[in-house]
Length: 200
Image (cartoon, rainbow, N blue to C red; front, side, top):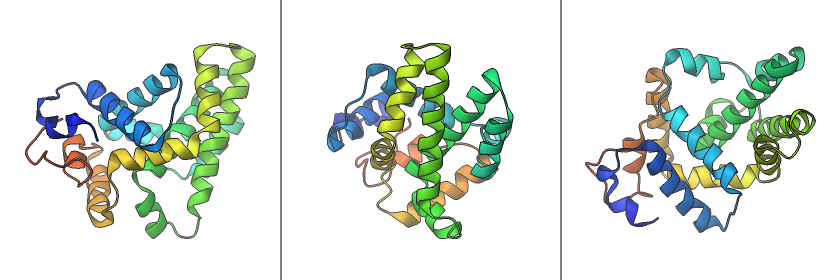
């Protein structure tokens, strides 16, 4: 990681924190994206780090992906766009941060199912935005997330530092109970050394 791993306690802005660490993860993987896409992902991470019970339910983490897909298929216009966005974002975040959890506790459905759901959701969004606002920022973002979904998942895994699955599982349990993604706790995993009593 970058030098920011040794001074996380000095970072008060979660957007700045996630931008720095996501950039480092991208660099490690050799991943490049448009600036619009990176900004979208930074805001996604920041918003998920601040979830409360109501917003966590609204996003769809407590509902099967198939139900979210059903919402999208049964909706129209902006509601359909929003439903696909929720499915894409929730799938991307879950696969990136909670892959071990999905593998252990939902073994009836293969992890590829969640990746496919997310990738296809962004593909539908790209098509919808191509019709609604061709060449616009979101058209570009969703097109790139469709093409690079799996690599972005890997970048999130680098950011999460999920080499220690037991630690990650504890953070997942805490997040499920409180609705809060504890950036400080993630920073204490080996991927972020030197941040024992820091705060993000």
